[in-house]
Amino acid sequence: MPGVERWDEDAFRRAGHAMIDRIAAYWSSLRRWQGAPPVLCRLAPGDVLASVPAQAPEEGESWDSIVADLDRVVMPGLTHWQSPKFFGYFPANISAPGVLGDLLSSGLGVQGMLWLTSPACTELETRTLDWMARLIGLPGVFLSDAPDGGGVIQGTASEATLVALVAARTCARAGWASEGGVGAFTPVVYTSDQAHSSVLKSAMIAGVADPPPAEGSAPEAGPVTGRGGVRFIRSDARYAMDPDELERRLEEDVAAGRHPCIVVATLGTTGVMGVDDLERVGAVCARHGVWLHVDAAFAGSALVCPEHRGMIRGVERADSFSFNPHKWLLTNFECALFWTRRRADLLRALSVTPEYLRNAGSATGRVIDYRDWQVPLGRRFRALKLWFVMRSYGAAGLRAHVRGHVRLAEEFESLVRGDGRFEVAVPRGLSLVCLALRAGDEATRRLLEHANASGEAFFSHTVVSRRGDGAPGPDRFIIRVAIGGTFTRRRDVLGAWDLLRRTADGVVGPA
Ligand SMILES: *Cc1c(COP(=O)(O)O)cnc(C)c1O
Image (cartoon, rainbow, N blue to C red; front, side, top):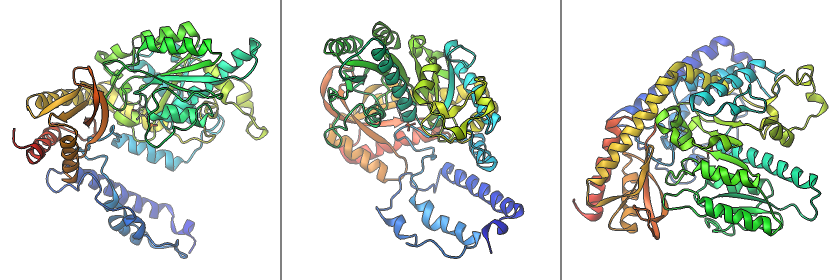
């Protein structure tokens, strides 16, 4: 019984409706106040592996038996990212329109590598990226009707950084060569010591930097070799890149005959939500003719609210900008948006055109072929989910989503301040609260372990080297409370605080 025949449209309809029912029931179970599953998965390494046979089945199995295994194999092996009590890392928002858009993308099954291979896949993406650019207050130079601008959906912020880095390096190298450069081209990448690991990883992939010397070590100064490298610029008391230090490092490298090619600034660093000053960093980049890429992976979503636009002051100096609606803007993974105002430089760095991709549409030069804007050739119809989300919630709904979480984070922060056993380790940024026990690292670490083991909520941690008032101090272990889940409401946040308080009773005694 060949599978294709068994799966006629009626069979698909029945199984599909049941799958939607299953997903809806899962969401309901996560939102249940009592009896929700533990947020952090409790299985040991290899448990899931051991529950699945070593060999694939020879004969096709009944759909019922496959679905029945979900409750045995898959569900117990999940950490529930969509739980309203998941406060770890950064959120990974989903929403009904986002999920339906992804489902439709799968069902339509088009592959949008070229304009020709589905004009709707390309042009709807262009339009939704223009919508979003306007919604978050990006200047017109990033819009698709600007002479050299436009946006694209990448898989992840890491890919966006890689693409920017490769474009910047190609551009810097061409400039060097056209000025009669001799000897070795030594590209150098600059970012703050708070930047996401994807900056170093992008430089490693691009052949610019060597891997870090040992697991987990964050190099103070980039290991700049004959091939180039990454300079990690010191951050200031507020965890923002120090622009004077950036300028000094750039000048040193230029004087030593190296070739600065890109500065990656961050809006909302992953650890503690530091925000680089785009005006000052951008001014340094402009003086040195260096590409400025802005990584706003998490914080970019907040730009839908005018009250948070202060952080993009100076963005008109940026050459590229990216943020992830798949973190905090209701659009399920993967959806990282990337805009540039140097489209020609990007295309020069990434275009390769074999005969089999040539076509009349592309030859007109009047269409976008998004394959030239990204690492892979093929691409999903990802604009559908973003289009659904933007239309279904509207700008007002997106703003309300962000504002609700920021308000909850404010309330949470004030609760922390009101309990003398705790301290706010870094002033709140947007919806991220960073806290510690005054009793020290060991106590804070135990608090985190016990709270997560309860299954009632999930938090993650980081290490910072400053006190709550920004003064330098020894490395400290802190707990991050990232509020931003699609389903997270006030009672969940108050419940999380109650859990931390109760757990602290056992660790350091009652307040
Ligand atoms: C989360 C994050 C990233 C990585 O995002 P991916 O889309 O998973 O690659 C990059 N930069 C910052 C600042 C982040 O917070």
